[in-house]
Structure formats: C-alpha cells, structure tokens
Length: 110
Image (cartoon, rainbow, N blue to C red; front, top):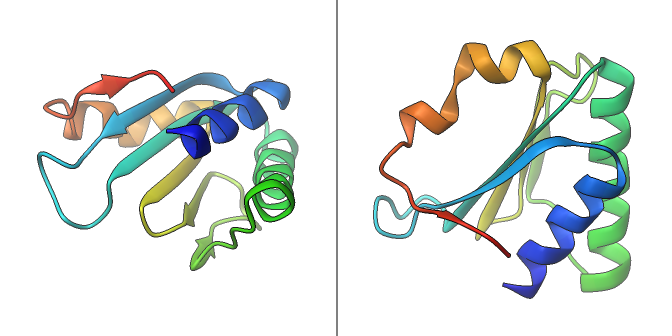
C-alpha cells in the first residue's frame, strides 16, 4: 500500500485530476491494481508520466516493465507488474471509461 500512496502523492503533486485506485485482485490475475488519473493537456500528461517514473525509480527502485502512449499523451499506460498506471487526457478518460468497465473493482484509498 505504501507504493500506491507514493504513486497517488506524485500524481497529486503534478495536479492530476481525480486519482483513483481500483483493486483488481478479486477480478483478474493480470495485475493487482489500476491507478487512474487525468490531465488537462498533453504536456501535463507527459509531465505526470515522466515525474512518476523518476519518483518511483528514485524512491522505490522501480522501473516500469512497459510504457506506451507518452508521445501522443492521450492515454499513457505504465505497467509496473503488480500495478498499472493509466494517465489520460481528460476527455479520453471519459471516452474509455475504465471505471465503468471495471465497476466491480473496489475503490481503495492508499
């Protein structure tokens, strides 16, 4: 849970909109948690992704297994194995609506 708290704190420092943690453990084996947040423009989304990667490497020694979407910054996915961070441009978050798709996943606070 400490790592999830670190992720949310970093996103909040970057002025991320509505960070949410979904606990996927009861529903799938693909990952334990989704962390979702959004930015108001592509520069903000790119900065959140960059800053999060730097903070997790410096403070927790973590590097993502896979990252995609940083260049377009409409939807950035950062796969850390036990958790996956989804950073959206605000209108794309509503369009893809992962909270609805995973509505059975409990929301948790770090």
